Image (cartoon, rainbow, N blue to C red):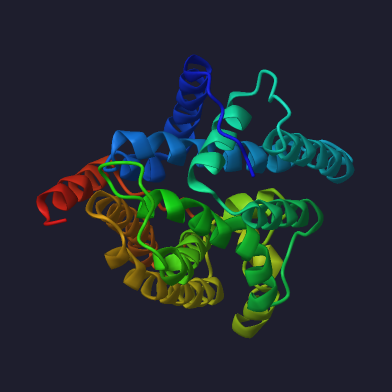
Length: 308
């Protein structure tokens, strides 16, 4: 069992560091967290900062084009995982605010250690694997890179808004699958939007069997704009992402009011990315689909005006 850490000053500073990481790198998620009670926000920031730090560790050498990056990145990832687990087991996270904050969050909410095992397994897969044969293979990766993010977040979102009491009995089990589906929906949205960016990192997250079905070659994904075959492929994947959103939707009603607003806003903003892709004729190669700031702000105001 992870024991809470008791130095308030150190913890406050650590959580603030996580908040700043979240603010800089996770615009849509960060915006949605503004609808949460303040005591919940810091824990969401901690989980985001931890997963972001790990993801950047995996991606940075590819961005830099460093030779032999896979072996070295694998060693760095293993060392980071060892340090994380040592922190959970009571070793002081010397000088690392993300580890200090995430350890506390795990302790407060009893987040399942197995979720972190699955997360690190998928991060290791990202080092070794640049493509996926079919959707089942991609789902194996996404289980640890996305679905478990939903289940890590679940006890924070389910906790009553007004205090730190536990969620009603059995509710976490009922909400678990919708939370997994929401993680899958968000990540598949990212994969669809970021086809060109991922290809530059040597990765294609759209299943090879789908490319073959629509007559898309890997070289087609490196073009300046999408040809008709690529557009048909992207339309198919958008439909698949929307199916995950539909599977996630029943979980929203299980949340307390302010968490419900937060997740509804995330639904709206990420769903708007798919809308932008559709409006661009499914051409994800000519430019990155971005939801304008004005539209994101309008979504916040609409959510605040709605009954919780």
